[in-house]
Length: 317
Image (cartoon, rainbow, N blue to C red):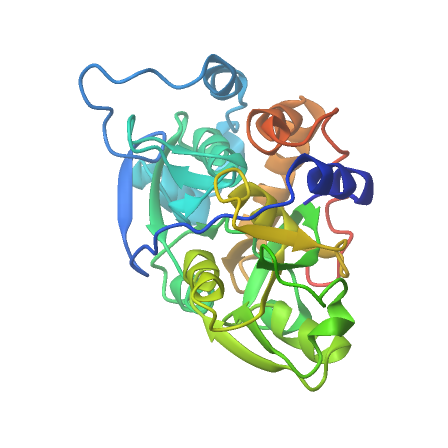
């Protein structure tokens, strides 16, 4: 997630947010790199991203412990990721190549290579209210989906990381006046993602706000454009990413929280958590985390990649 200087640059880089067509709550795509096979004649993945995967480490055989989640994934030959297909710069399916691209998507592919030896991923497109169930019932191995670490979630799932830091911000339709800070939401109808930290954060700064929730970021953006609320509270990283394509919406003010993203794992799977944290440290030390950021979020935010957050620095991680 983005540190304060990077967040400020993100706001300057893009002050609008985009509506994205709503995807079904559960859809999957798979193939090498986490997407359907590239159609004939389609362009190859960007060189920088391809280089990142080529240079990504592979775990030693001794790290794949017998009977572990890692061994099951390696035997299957595919990492199953709970994530998004419609989050620009983070995890979005390219309609031309079929590839799933973005910061979260690239990290998922690098983790797959670390376990399997190649970046073979299947993405289950999940909603914010389904992620815990997908992990607990074994539908997915991990979740890469702007998954903020909270004490409540840590009672249901395990978190590796944190691997990124962002913060909640406020978006409105362009032309709306009277909302310049979170406290201005008090007494108004505000949109938030279901089962997200935005809900208690809104209640804290605007206790008289009426909160309406939707299952995905695209649904929330669409509801805002339809006038079903006067504002939408979401991670600024998502809002700025959406801002690449929709000038009708805008971000107001600066982030008013600090939210660490974690890699969601099945609850109490300490072996997998230790393994994933070890992998995360390796790609940070090798500069591959920074390269993934530059290939995605860094195409909007100018300057060098921020320092990744310290692994294990957040309660619950």
